[in-house]
Length: 163
Image (cartoon, rainbow, N blue to C red; front, side, top):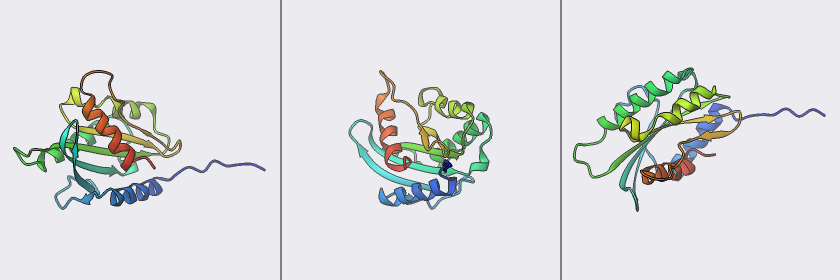
């Protein structure tokens, strides 16, 4: 008897994330989404970061083929965050842009992980879900400075994007 490994398809992953979105009270954004299919948001209070406004989106599988695609899409999502956060708003906007890809090239995963809050002056976290390995590549929590926002990212990722 021969066993064939069946991996999660991007549509299955999207459906699972949508179910998580409903479970954790993320609402659809009713604004211009700069070409993103669907954007969801939620508000929360975090003991370390304070009041947060979380935006999340999934990117079509065919929208990423190079590391530059990761960076340009994350930059576009950052622009969306800025445009949808009122000046003087007393919340910290956080953005998660997820690329569900079967067996992504390591350079794509590295591009997402290297798009950091400190270097980009942004609160956008690009994430790559490897559908074949059923693994979500997220940003690691640093050992020293700036841990709060990365810890928040790890918690948000776990409840919304890990399936």
